[in-house]
Image 1 (cartoon, rainbow, N blue to C red):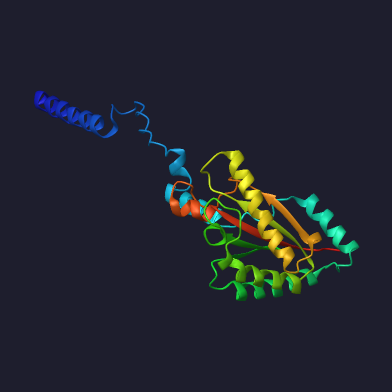
Image 2 (cartoon, rainbow, N blue to C red):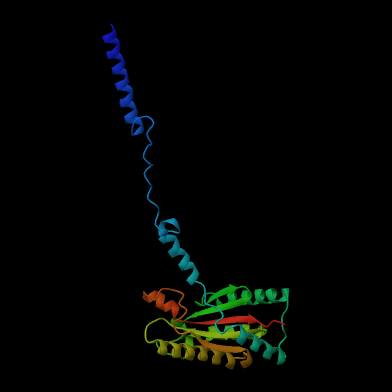
Length: 238
């Protein structure tokens, strides 16, 4: 009887020890191994996906570059205009004035290919180079005269603004050539506006060359968008 009892006890102990080894990875009372570390996401995965980043970048560069000549140049021109008798705007009158001018420009530029962008109190007109100029030329094409006539008419109606005319190019050709071409194109547009009633004192011209693309220069379509002239209207503030 004692022999049978001992055999049963041994069998039970053997079964219990086997169960502990299976469930705990070791015998009862031993320290289990640390859990396996999960792979951490790469920085690209942890943040925005490439698709989202591409969409964000596309939205950002789709906005016109806006004022390029700098605050000091604009302030000097504003003071000169006030000295010349152009009334300065202040407070809520600024936003209301630009609201009305923006509305007039959107109506007159509709269907012309000219984009109208509002950034705070500034308004920028983006004029595509393929309709404004012939290829590799700085003379305004005659078919674009009616559009510039409407721009000039609006600027003379709303004369309490500084007018910056900025030329832009794609990245084909040398930096120096593109810079020169952008300056000549800006000067051509500014000269046309001045000849149609816009005060010379209001005009600032600047060439940006290829430094401010609004689309990829890797495609013909993108380069066409980057060849442009932008006119930015800054209110004269008191």
